View 1 (cartoon, one colour):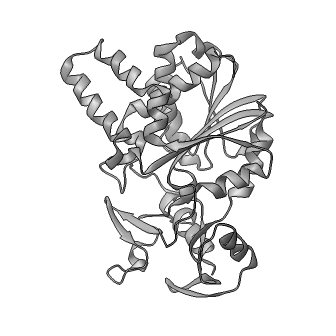
View 2: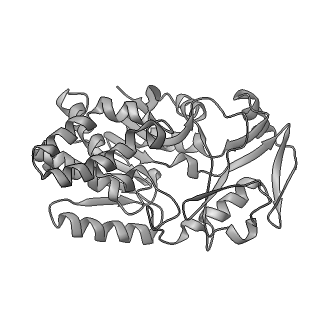
View 3: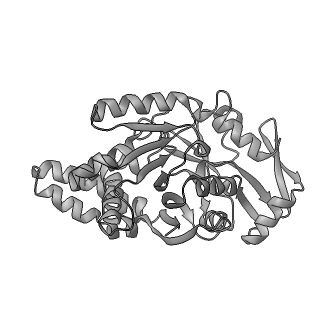
Length: 330
């Protein structure tokens, strides 16, 4: 089978890695910014409040997270919106798009435990079913979870008995490899369809997403497996792929120019691309931490400060992760 089909089975097939609930954080295979600190979602919440206060988005906007897993990120966004401008909870709509029913069940329970009747969560199983006039979309580490093809000097990969063979001629993959100046590496599959579906959701939206990668393509393979916070290069003689298949996460670096081009093809414009560190600081994470310092004991403040530092320090998530903002209808 083609490598993209193999990766789809690994992540989303029957018994695949994401076919059942997975812990993220210390007890999982990997960390995310969401699991590191509530101030990640809090800073995004501050950004949303700022957009509304400046008149760029309406108080009746739908705030929609795509691929929310447990629902922690959207919950953190809501918590900080309430802290900064509580009246917005009466007008904003909060939405999660999640294809897995078992995750939608987790999200409902978590929101009921967190907010009771104060916040109503609306859920959809796909973007195709979601139509609104205006939306703020947010997604964290979604593009690295799209299947990809592997490409090497003119040939694409197929997989047989968990072994990769570069002997397939695939014109579409080859054209994309040439476009992004790659003679080897990963070529994502599905960005174009994703952009088309989002563009059809609403005539006006802002989409903010965070992921690891660079704007231009890496000159080599980045595909790797995360197992209990250890990173295994996919092409390694020291691991047995058949034993890791579907039991641990498989991922690769995002080529953000590919994401930007996919959205540009449907008329969605790039607004900003930056490191996570720069994005969070400019949106006001330090202001939020200063607010916290004035309200809690020093010990708790230092604990939250240490967590937030993990988001922005260059040697942690601050430089490795990037933020992309896209807009339609502004």
